[in-house]
Image (cartoon, rainbow, N blue to C red; front, side, top):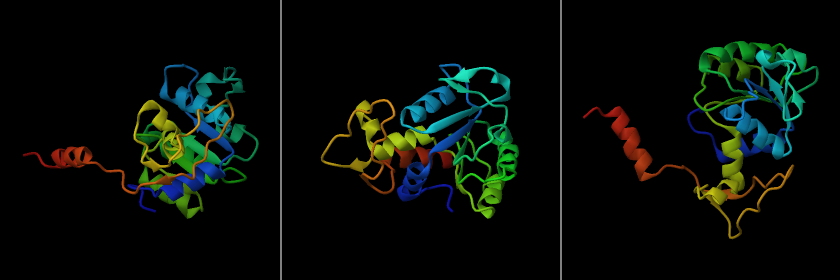
Length: 194
């Protein structure tokens, strides 16, 4: 798998096939990115499980925190890692030690560990790195277009406003690539010191 560019079909298949998501590094602090992602995915009908040993005894949107993946005590479809890259391998090792392996290991924006990805893929687990499932869901469902963002999806109908527990269709046609002249210039300027 090329972890620098994921086909929309790969992301769609993952998001359509998940029911339970354990978010490692979830935070009850309502200004943290993990809180926003957790809430958004829960509102889209995913069974969210907050994993953070520092918050055991608390809950996040009515879901009790657990200290580790092994404390969940039931199969999970996806492990969403909201930790820095240096903390990914131990989470992947813990996921690989579960009695029933998750289908997906997802590393949030800014998080990447190629060795951990290779290890998970060798065990038959799909991997996504440096992406946010909240952003990908919004982009592929065209929901993000409600905020004026070009989702690169094509439809003659605007995506409906979602309601609590409503999942939007992730099967809208999308344009390939996702590059713009501005992003091409930024990438060139980053690599060319002149």
